[in-house]
Image (cartoon, rainbow, N blue to C red; front, side, top):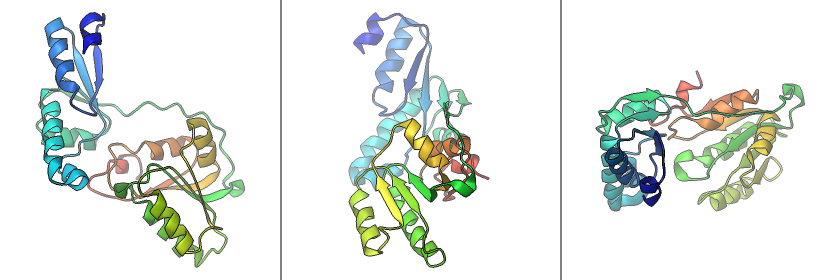
Length: 231
């Protein structure tokens, strides 16, 4: 807030999350006569209750207020735009996908090291367990299938336990988050990316995979905008 009061700027680009800062940003910009545009990646709406239980009402209220007072908006997908309208946003909304800078040499599909990759946070709504279950089923037909999971999160321990219980240690490798360059190299060395998430404001990893020359398969869900990337 103090920065906005003392620094010179012509336009303020404000990221929506974690929402509460949108309020002072809009107020100060109005006082200074400067335009502000708020970039929204997704809207949680009633998902706040799934995430926080009854106290999720507070998050929903703050998010809704931020949506309503945003004077101009960039939405990363048409789905996010519709969510914002449903949340009460009346401002002009410009749909602009996130920028990407993917520079990697693609690998011939026949020479790729892995068959499948999961890359993302290991949390409930991204359903990393579906990836493990899929590898388990495919192994019935392709015994030497090779898969890799990249990421961390509260479901990581459960995923590692599933891999052990299903005797998939020789089929699934698992590692922490990687720097972008190394992640792109890994994706380009994999035949297909799997995105089983039920909530995606855009689906960045699927778009990045396309730049790596790797097709994606994703979960079709009303709360995911990934179907704007994958047809």
